[in-house]
Length: 321
Image (tube, rainbow, N blue to C red):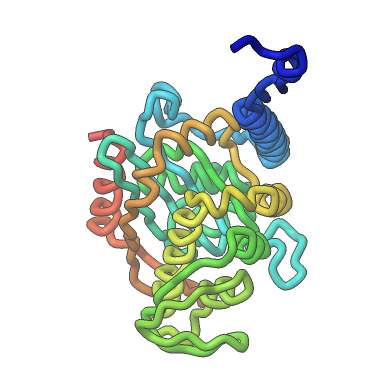
């Protein structure tokens, strides 16, 4: 049966099918997200580069290696970590290095070692030719003399240094969102109470108090050095987490105000990308001495056998023997 004109007209006015917009919207969202992420990465890169340029401070030291270490080639390296008392209790003078640690990192074995050197260690101050407390090297000649003195004492190359003032310890812990430590003893100091065997989350002020208490520790300065290594290890592990990266601006601001290092930006990126596993596997070592009095001054005298023990461990870690 033939269609009427009315039916033919009605058929000619059927609505066209709507095109699906879903794929276009999804694509647009992806483009926006990629753009935002790209801007974020650029901002992070720009901020990190700017900060590392401000905290970078080259230093002249006596050459121990035939060729400088190359972290781009995943070679084992050492870092001297100095905690100076400038910035603590309002001090602004040169100060002394009250905390002296050497960290060696080996990406092949995925191991790191942290050695504490007693600040009263009786040793030759490189460049002065006199015997004195090792922490006086910083007061006499700054970072350069400290590095040379530690190299001579341990008979290993010191490739890099990181110097942080005491206020910086507090600020860094706050910037990473606090750290967790398990106290080896119970004590109260500066209004904070710590309980043996109890794991606690510490903010910057609590971490600083925890790390510098000495007189109530039955192990004296050695006990304090052990707690300082705990704090450092907790910071290193926290910095490697994603939650810290999200708060990178606070971390960078803290570094800029409280830290100096001879690690260039490229070195930091190589270490972050190639050494993270080793940084999470840390062995703590204590260089031990015996208390002696000389001319009315207290020193820690390290036995040659003890010095050889620690030196050998570090040389093996650095693949020097």
